[in-house]
Image (tube, rainbow, N blue to C red; front, top):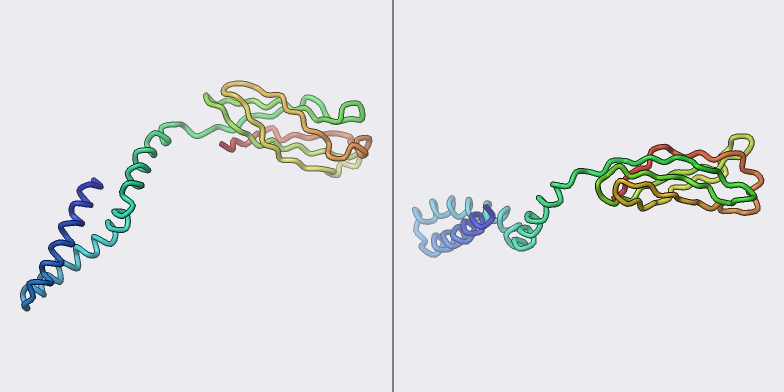
Length: 160
């Protein structure tokens, strides 16, 4: 279809310039309409016509990328919270997809009163149909004794 539009654009421009060259009231009148129509059509086609090689490659690339299903979100499960003995929160992230994916995992470190000390949102790469163990360090080692619990969002959001 792009080739037809480009061919139409070329002949439309050719007719428009011939009509303008022919002159005369009848030639100008019908030439103006046909030239105007070709020009309007040429503007919309011409804009993409100038980028035709890019458009063709984009059109060619699009169907292959559209055939892949969108990524599903994964799951995240807290294995252990950070403590003075082990300053890492450990989370298992599961990828339900048939291809490798990157997920955002959200972990909150809470104190004894339930206030959030630190909120994190880390990206974790997980192979297709697999589970990865991710360890997140507590930012301030001096505050480890203040952590009462960790909370993990059970939904690991698929990024790419």
